Length: 556
Image (tube, rainbow, N blue to C red):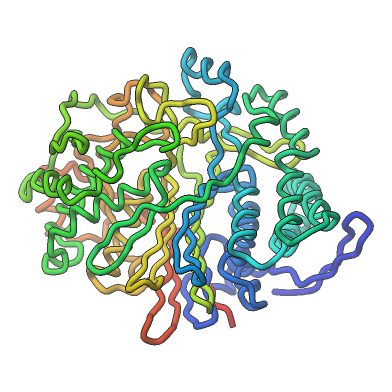
């Protein structure tokens, strides 16, 4: 349902067509040649598709969708959250990673407090990182987009103006301040975008945020905001059966997908049969090995030396692959030693399962346009008990994805990015983009990505089937949301394998006989969205799991 609205903004009457639709009008899958969007709520998807229909690029549509998701998918995301992004630029033919993740406080006294008292694990403003989403959106628009911040935020303002939550009106005021800064700034489009960004991180909005931080006992201050920047980095990539799979760096868990693919390229999964016991077993055992390395070695590479080249090397892969026993499920946590070229690093056996900490706090966004550009983003805000401040901005608890274990690569340090679970995926074939995937679901994100990716590459499923096929995941890893300095105590569930009920009884029996600690995972297991571009026809197919209330649409 679309209708014209007019409202006053600093004395100026603005009239536009808001993209507010009834969710039932949009389905979970779509195909077209002019561009596609798959994300969370239908209103946010509609906002992105409208930009594509106006001639905007994938980055423009992604920025618009992300901002709208901060309202429609609030609770999973907010403008005070974080957004790792991967972008394929058709002009440069390159994939770049945009970090979109805020860091821990810069104040050494705050860091000392964490080591003395522990990082709060179940919700606290003290665990708030710098908000990354606004700078991410501006950076995405500056580097890869064509539209203004005002155009990108217009659907979000319409949603806020029609909303009824107490934080809607204050957030609308805050966002209009950024629009005002962009409008009144002189210079190029990029300089105007920077002015909008600077009002949030350096201007009066930053003053409001600092006052809120002080009132709530948070450690962040205005210098933390002013120092923030969205790092643009080269992604990590591997080749898998003729495809090049790109992930953000080890400041996310993303490279674990690359490690898992390297192990699994040595098996003919297709001949095993989709979702057979053999298929599920070998993938699960590979994931256990990959996640053991993730837990041992990943962290912000600006602070910790992460042996990524060694972890993805042929030699290390060949050392690790024989650890997979085809007839028996492993019960041990088995990180390797890539630097010294050893299959195993001597470790203590982890203790019993840790307590379950809250973590479902993420949404999804993938976009492709008619010019061959593609974006995958995973917006999130681990807010837990945090409430919006006077500015309408809320913040998360992502500092709890760091820890206080001395010498650990993911230990908390001033200005360090937490190693987040957020992990978008782009895939190229013969130099052209073919797949974009985003998944919400904590430690399950890259496990579900692996399910969905192999559904397409190994078993030939198109997005609609790939995102709805039964899934499985293991809890045989550390909890990324548990900051316990005893990392063995953060281990979740030794040997645990969770499967959807639709998997066959024969497969379940065989997996049980091999020693897996089986449990039924209710659908949906995590929340995937996916785009596939058919190079032969130019048709883009987008889908999101309808059980997870994902939506997709194509530009007309």
